[in-house]
Amino acid sequence: MLKKILIITGDAGESFEILYASHRLREAGYTPVIAAPAVKRMNLVMHDFEPGWDTYVERKGYLLMADISFDDVNTADYTAVLMPGGRAPEYLRNDERVIKIIKEFYNAGKYVFAICHGTQILVTAGLVNNRNIACYEHVKSEVEACGGKYVKNDEAVQDGKIVTGKTWQSHPEFYKIVFSCLEH
Image (cartoon, rainbow, N blue to C red; front, side):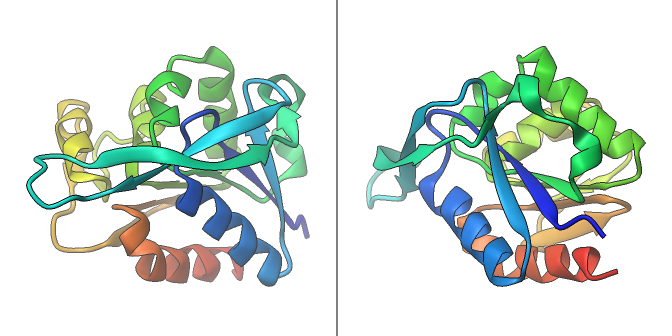
């Protein structure tokens, strides 16, 4: 059985979502592999909410080295793919290599996991139509415009081989579903 999970991110990826995923996967016996546009040290960010602000604030996060570039991804080597949020998905969804990778996982019947803004990549890949999707509330309109159903009352949801979660605050619910999928 394959024990490697591909994590797709880049500069401005959400620190907590990427590091939490990496640590939880390792703890459960999986090998997380961080894929980015290029093998380099990435600048991650931290998003949080401040009183009086209408949206989240962004602060500099941790530095993290990518393991491989998107050019070096062979989807046959992995059990599943995970797309954390942050601002990285905003530009990664325009990278043809990323869309090709996500579609290959989906077409191979493998699990595709996305949390927060990571869902923007699912939208661009055409994988939200007629699906229940949990994501950051400000991605809701993109999901609905592409035929998806935004799930308001659940922190995370599984629809077939696609598992989505709202934000890093949804980690308990999201990873409960993720590990249930990986164990079967």
